[in-house]
Length: 402
Image (tube, rainbow, N blue to C red; front, side, top):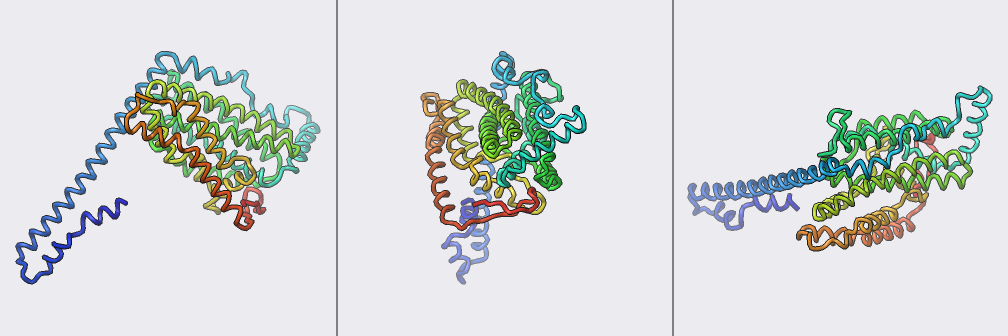
């Protein structure tokens, strides 16, 4: 409670209060008391300033060490050997036009293909449409995500066409991710089930608002960890959407979400491998970074979305995703457990500092805590009355959030 502590430090002691209001006290004594209190306050502020300076210096040193590791992974060819092969060459990659009605066909065939897409989309329920739109808007935030990637020390693309491996990874990742928003956007436009102007306004707002960054945006360790979690979360969400679309008879949407999920899976593999390599090289730094990212919570990059009307739009979208099973709190707990196991966090031993061991204990105990919190939230939700919210994305039709 820093506010309370500051007040306590600045407040006069009971003895000084008694002296200040004593009729026997001389003016000189009163001034002396004020001077003592002023000196105490100044000392307190100096200590706080020194602590902030020390923390900043420590963070700067850590980022410099992390940057050196990233440069070594580039210089020794590790990125070229292990990450870049995960990207599909442009000549072999699918493109949005491959999965949507063809406009190279005759006019009659075009109309027939669009009519078939719309007939299948008519069976997709509104809650799944809301999840699909929310996912698409998140994908359309790509300019913000690339700019965040360019802040990472030792991995940024300073000129926009740098030749080092991390810059090539970032541009290649961006090129693949760019197709996701394009494909989902075009499907939603053709299906005729959503208010595209409201959807487009939401994208516009999100790009203007940006995203809440990870604890240290320039930290390679924080960025690699966040990337692994985020790619796995989007894989789960798109894969679940594909499954539900298939059950509702929309084979086109199922295939669209399936190919996007496959991309996310490859990207997850890249960030997971790079994180594992960093754990092997600097286990203490990585486990502390993992704990810091977990304490800050891994939120979706579309968290700041709004359609200009609903300031809680992301919360409502997330509630629909939770209720429909597209992405749930339980999935987050599963992810934490997966990465703790994949990066062998529990097996880190003698190389850890005291802070590193505390971070290890925290991270290893987190899956149980997340699951317990999810159970409590589920129990509370079960006792609540049903509630619906109108989404502008689907022409203000009400959609159940619980």
